[in-house]
Length: 116
Image 1: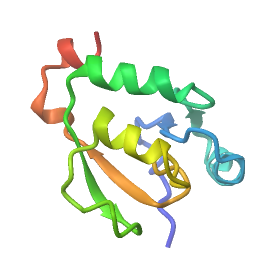
Image 2: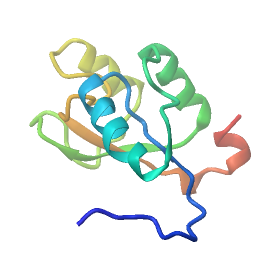
Image 3: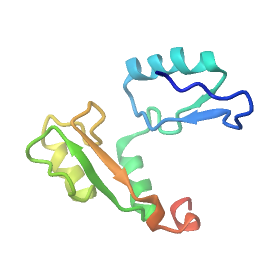
Image 4: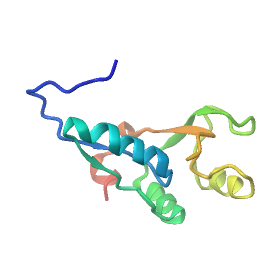
């Protein structure tokens, strides 16, 4: 079943890392707003080059956590080299179409560095 917030919950907003898939954003908008949540999409429609630069500046290490693409191994570091390799293929460079998922290891970097 779906998670429904308790009446005393202090959760007021949900934040999503969606980049450009309108049908997913529309589904989230339809289904989560009816529970009173404010929805935030800080990465929505951001340019990939800017996102990659921001990721590198954050110093947050990222790795591939799941993949539907044989050439992209689980555990591989997600970095500029992989991004540039993917630019030469049909695979979305951030896996936005479900080709792969990544894990941002935010716990490995001080907040003051990651959010600079």
